[in-house]
Amino acid sequence: MAKPRVALDIEIPSDVKYIEQVVELATRQCRELQMPPKKCSLNVPVALSEALSNAIIRGNRNGKGKHVRVRAVVSDDAIVFDVADEGPDFDMEKMRVEPTAENVMREDGRGLFLMYRLMDRVEHIRNRGNVIRLTLRRE
Amino acid sequence: MSFSISKQGDVVVVDVEGQLIVGNRQELKQKVLDELERGEKKFLIDFSQTGYIDSSGLGVLVSLSKKIREQGGELRLANLNDDLQTLFELTKLDTLFQISDSRERALESF
Image (cartoon, rainbow over all chains, first blue to last red; front, side):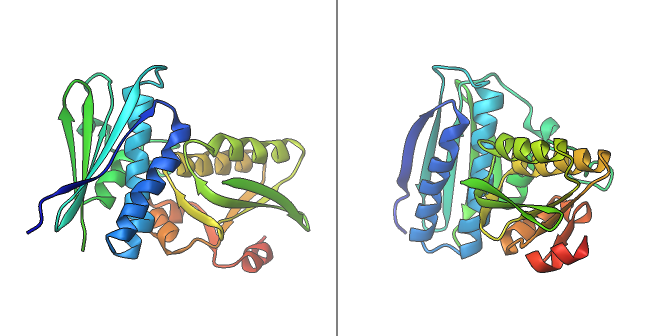
């Protein structure tokens, strides 16, 4: 069994314009690991994009001078993304909304639901800010 | 990523090239609302050249759908790839929008 390795470690300013570039780097990693195509074209881009926009908009509240750090660690069986902001604590479970016929017309509130559905595991770790840890099996 | 707008008959067709995400959703919204304000009623968004859509992008589509309906118009979608189809099914948005598998079929459906 190979030792887990850091495949990505970058820090971006709190601005949504950087999301697409980070997602592209992560997606490239996913393809290089020869993960299933759908995981590279759907699961990783959408879930990571949601985690990043949450960190920038809700965590850091678009604060100038604040940053979001993204790390990806690859092991034999999974890729794990840590998305860290500098914001106050929040209750992730309370913010998660399952789509129903009644709330389908909502304009927001789908981000956390998508993260949970597209990743094998989602964790909220309270550090100096918040860390959202997304785990996706490689197979 | 960009949005191009063209007119096919009386339908405004919007092509989404690249991603529809939190960083560019406002641009799409404004372009469609500008056309709506000019009196256009029929809108088709074509996703044949689209990569992925995040929850903000999905939210903008819902918002546009509501605003267009309020003005007595219609919004239809075309050419969702397998990934986008999955996204719409997961979020149940496939029940909200009329989705065609080609631009031609979508245009004929108005």
